[in-house]
View 1: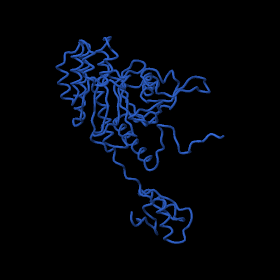
View 2: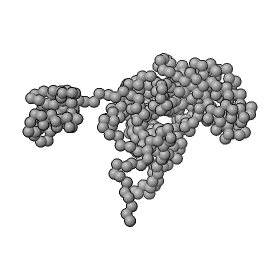
View 3: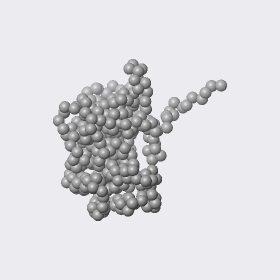
View 4: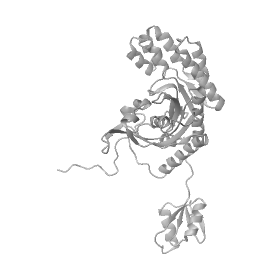
Length: 381
């Protein structure tokens, strides 16, 4: 009995083929994003898909170790990992190959990442990333710059209306410390469960509930945070949120900003302000990022945008009109047509009649046909 083989088009869960015209849309979108990054002084780097575990999991990379595919390098006999996130690689480049480069150091990147598992909300296991990292000063102005640059890149891609959610992931862990019922309290905070917070929070419950209720637009959240009595070690974190909001508004005054003081999910390596970017009316994240430490302790901040998700929200760019060139069309005429913006489709065999030529052009999805010495629209296109 032979084992049934999967259909050739069947792919593992979380993987998909990107077909025309979506593959071209994604490529154009990625170049639009990175071109916008470059216009703001962010220089592009290209880290490898694979690294040794010892470097890939150093510093912030340890936070994505459980999402990383690992295998033995047959040449060095050392364990390697296929990146699940590009940010740790940029941090490695900044602190090794570019350690002597002037700070602040502005780097940009674009590429694919591979995850061990997806989630119910985001089942994809191969994800595209395009982002920026600003290595150097730990200042609100640096946090604000990455937000403004990401917003400008999205605007260049046709997404002008976005919402920026600001959080401070270290705040809740620092406030909880070694609190009794730590696990139950963390679970209640994660679920935004006010009753659970009240039941397990003890003396911290009033403060935690006040922080929970402070979430909202930046103005209302900052006003609420100002009234909450916070320990002296925690107050600077709330003040940093306020300073960052002011810095963002200086650079991009029209951005919609919200704050969630108790949100800390999914930011295991962030050490300061963290950011999530949404398109209004959609739950999908267009990007996320925040402040972290490189493996040598140098401070950095950055934002990663997700072209796959952005592609579903951005307006589709106009494709080149497809021009059918009957067999025998002079090469210089074809070159001139491409210079005018056409995608030329060359006929490989001569047709018997004009009608056959037009039928072949339509069969190949062309909108124009070369007749005589010029491109002419095909009727109905």
